[in-house]
Image 1 (cartoon, rainbow, N blue to C red):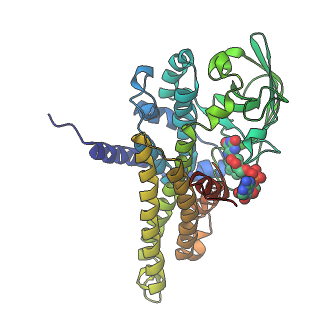
Image 2: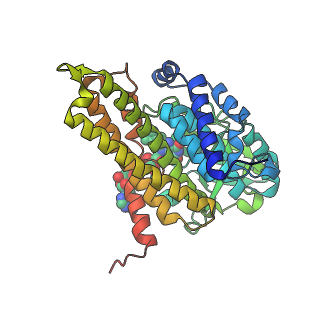
Image 3: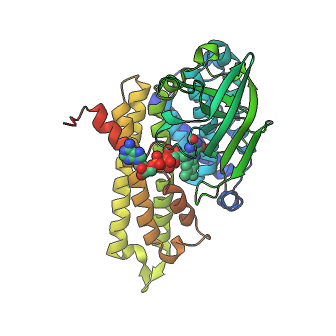
Length: 388
Ligand SMILES: Cc1cc2nc3c(=O)[nH]c(=O)nc-3n(C[C@H](O)[C@H](O)[C@H](O)COP(=O)(O)OP(=O)(O)OC[C@H]3O[C@@H](n4cnc5c(N)ncnc54)[C@H](O)[C@@H]3O)c2cc1C
C-alpha cells in the first residue's frame, strides 16, 4: 500500500479544512459572529473531532505528533473565512498545546494535553498589562505562594477570548524586587473564578474572540496551576522566550496570510462580475494591475510563512526567519487587503461584503504577537548588526 507523501498529506489537510469551512462556517454565520462579537464554541469541538487540535501534541499525550506546517495550514484556512474560529483554534492547539508540551511538568503534560487534543482546554494569553506592552519582562501582576495556594493581584489588558476559554495563561511577577528575567512565572487562572473581573474592550477587529480587561483581586488558585510545577516558579521568562516564541510569530503570519487570501479571492471574483462602462472592471488596466500585484505579493508571503514553518519542522534554528516572516507577511497582508478594498470601491467599505471585515482584522496583524518594529529589532540583533 502506498502512503501519502508529506506534501500530499498537507494538501489533503488543506482540502479537509476547506470543506469544513464551507460546511460549518458559512459566510452569513461568520458575519453574525463578527456583528455580535461572539461565536459558538461548538465549531471548535467539531474541529477537534477531526483531530486538528492534536497536531501540535506528541502521540503519547493523545495527539498525532507535532507538525508546524500542518498547524499553519489550519490557521490560514480558518482565517481565510473567520479570524474568530482561527483564534479559537490557536487558543487550543497553540497557546495550550504547543506551550504545555514545552513548558509543563511531565505530570501536567499527561493530565492536560489529552484534554487539549479533545478541544476541551483553551487558553487565553494574559501577557499584556495596562502599563506593559512590548516590554513583557516588566509585568507587575503579582503572584505570592502561600502553601498549596498561589494568590494573584493585578490586571491584564487585551486578554482575548476570556468569555469562552478555560484558563488564562498568565505571566506574573512571582518575585517582586527579584532579578529581571528571573522573577516571572506562568500560572493558569480560570476566567470564571472568585476575584476575577472581566470587562470587554471595544477593538475594531478580531471580533468574535472578544478582547478584554481582566482584574485579579486576591485570586487564589491551587499551586498545581503553576506551569512547570514547583520547578516552574520564577522560570517564566525562559518559558516565554523559548522555541515556542518562534512558532508564535508565524501563527500570526498564517492568520494574516489567510485574511489576505480571502480578500484577494473575493476581489478577484468581484472584479469579473462588476460591470462599469459596459464591461467588467477586470478589463480596466488599473484593476488588472492591482490584482496581479496582489497575487504576486501573496505568493511571496506564502513562501515566507511556509519556509519558516519547514525550518521549525526540521528542528533548525529559525528565530531570524520567523521574525522576517512575521514582519513581511503581516505588513504585506495589510497592503494587499487595502488594495483589494480599492478594487471593490464603495462595496469594500460596507458590511454587506466581507472585505470590510478583512480590513478591520488585518490592521492589527503588524501590532500583535510582537510588533513589526520589535521584529526588525530581533532581526538586526540576531544577525549581530553592530551598534557602534
Ligand atoms: C485586538 C487585540 C488583541 C490582543 N490580544 C492579546 C492577547 O490575547 N493577549 C495579550 O497578552 N495581548 C494581546 N494583545 C496585545 C498585543 O499583543 C500588544 O498590543 C502588543 O504586544 C504591543 O503592545 P502595545 O500595543 O502596548 O505597544 P507598545 O509596546 O506600547 O508599543 C507602542 C509602539 O512603540 C513601538 N515600540 C515599543 N518598543 C519598541 C522598541 N524596543 N523598539 C522599537 N519600537 C518599539 C511599537 O512597535 C509600537 O509601534 C492584543 C491587542 C489587540 C489590539
